[in-house]
Length: 154
Image (cartoon, rainbow, N blue to C red; front, side, top):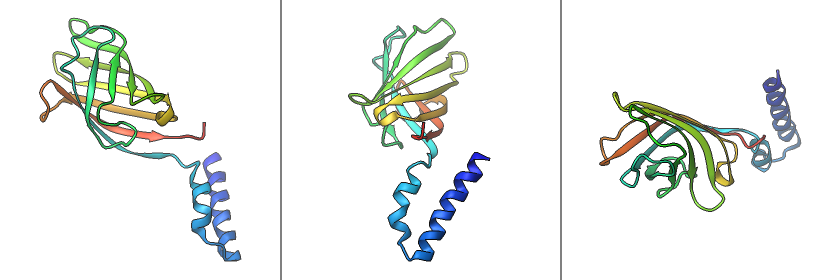
């Protein structure tokens, strides 16, 4: 119901603009400011600096999301166990830009899942759910593939 009301409100604003002869482009930034951004996420990270301990990190080598810059770090809060990594994470991308989440990676099959929800700075309203697989392009690397969204209306 809330989505229907929001759509009706935005549609009504655009209709009124058309009747009054106001450029829709003039209204678009404010009308679209509350619209979430979303899409597919692909990140490659290399983990040569990660030895399995708490506080260890991997470094992003490529990303299709501007907020996740090359050089960003994924820092692991818990040490890896014998069979899996099951840890809280902090994704940092420069001063004041961080997101929190959780990752699980099974060592037997090399498959995992990470979820990220919330953050500060460039990650305000950020949410993502990604599968983790061994990278075919980076030595000691891992690919994150999934979906993301930004909803800054919170």
